[in-house]
Length: 97
Image (cartoon, rainbow, N blue to C red; front, side):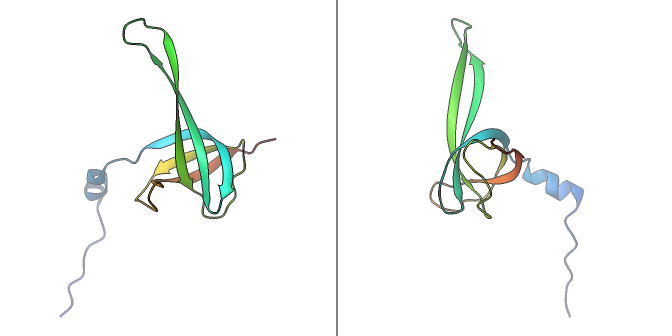
């Protein structure tokens, strides 16, 4: 007697939560299947209210080695691929000139 499991419903998939998506620039493509993407954001200083630019670097999985330095890419959070890689390339928004 085999028991069939139903396909995941909308409620079950929404319980997992949305994965973070970021837009950034590739600053290094020297590794195999990995690129380093710099994501920038601007936040107001808590006391002085001046806009402060903040930059974060992510090691991102690029399965087909398509990305090059200067490309604008959209990345998404994913399971741990290696010690430091927790992001992967969703799409290349704009190729570098």
